Image (cartoon, rainbow, N blue to C red; front, side):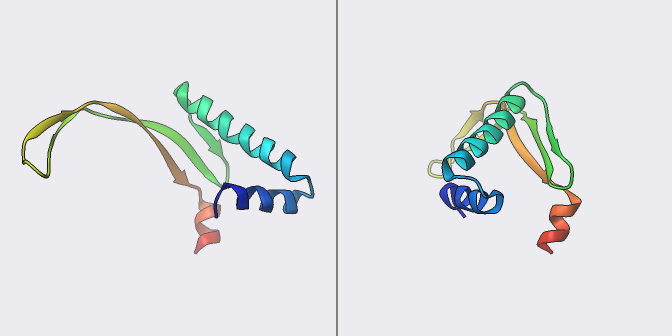
Length: 90
């Protein structure tokens, strides 16, 4: 399912116009992004938790040349599914 199909599903499920469904989806994703940028986690009970983890700097290897290179530290967004979502999928 891509973004436009998700918008169609939201509009049909909530019985709202597609434009309103798109604004709602954009607001949700924007709010989650803003919270993660601030270092907060977003917990949606029953669905899951969005969080940011730190990846330390490390030494990697170029697969073509075999030469070592430094990979910089970075922040990585993550998602952990909640129990209700896991149960619904299984």
